[in-house]
Length: 63
Length: 477
Image (cartoon, each protein chain N blue to C red):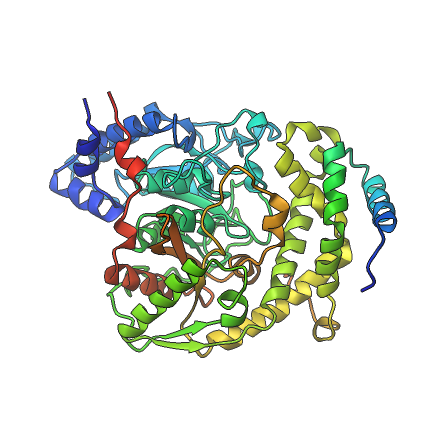
């Protein structure tokens, strides 16, 4: 995964926050910016060949 | 006047012991309840384990228990036993806050949560609602106006979260047991940090009806007590299908005590070293204590073998994606419309959910499916898995950084992902005198095996009998 520049991180966070219509304090916003990259790494780690075609664990009993 | 020494010496230290005393007339439930209520009130100035103490309801329940004993009516081991309830579970006799200004008080105006109802029907005496991290996530924020529970072993440290109050209350001897909830370790973490026993049962074993959700598919309700035996007594009452909770499973509830014979001879204990023991971030004293515990179990006849869970690290990421996704969905409207009512750590924690996508959530469920299979393969060859409960001892309040904590490996959250039963018990203390937790996980609905190993370890050791000095210093004038 290519590392994002701080400006790219800011743009990405601004986009999701705007889409979510989430009001943030300056501190909230700073924390999202700070955590964005590590969460991206974790999100990316969820995608690997062994789970590519796997059925998810969610279960919906039909009754 | 009740002196500190009299409170320590003349009160039972476990549910099992109290049950024996109640049945031989050595103590009454009213006497026990009054003593613990007095102790709890004094400890509010230091440990602050409770959000609400329900004196009148507790005394009334204790009177009822005593009257039934007198009439020869015995509901079982919890009759007359004082317990605490995490304030995220609905109770008819007290408000439910989830330690938050956000939760609509009307939410709590309902019948008892199923788990609470079962405890009452078993004759338990509920002393009150115990403190927690707001909505069972985040970190205490004094600006919300709620008291912050402290660790009885060191008041400068957290008892852990999110079942902070129950953990602190049990460790300090304010109650003999209580309920916690666990979405990523919220029963087992406080159990480890407070030197007590705490069981996250199998997902579906105990009804969640009447509990404010955090992560719908990860939340569990379970017992916290001084001993594994007491946890088994509580689980026996709590377990069972509930039509009010579609997650509960209609399976037989076995005798949780049947296997508690002190023997581990012939049992196979798996140790997933790579992601749970040979981890650079793991406190060296904890690692040593866990290895010593394994030696102790091996010495008692268990066979200890290394096992591999290669997807464990990714499974932790999956648990986080699911938890933040589910928590964000629950809190989304309030985060938009009245965000400043949340404590800042809770708000900022749940806000992380906005950084995950719907695709991440499904992908995490795929990982969940894969990891469940991997663990099932391993558990086909061993009876339980043993690991440290936590990377470190209870953190200090001062200097806490939630982002540092979030970036560290978790040994507990993967068992929420799989839904498997997992128990934390005390396996020693650091040189600084802080408790160390040992985690025992088992096959689905095989709590009896998990309890058996934990109970056997407690018969081999005395770590679980140690009490914080502070608990002995609490005095009542």
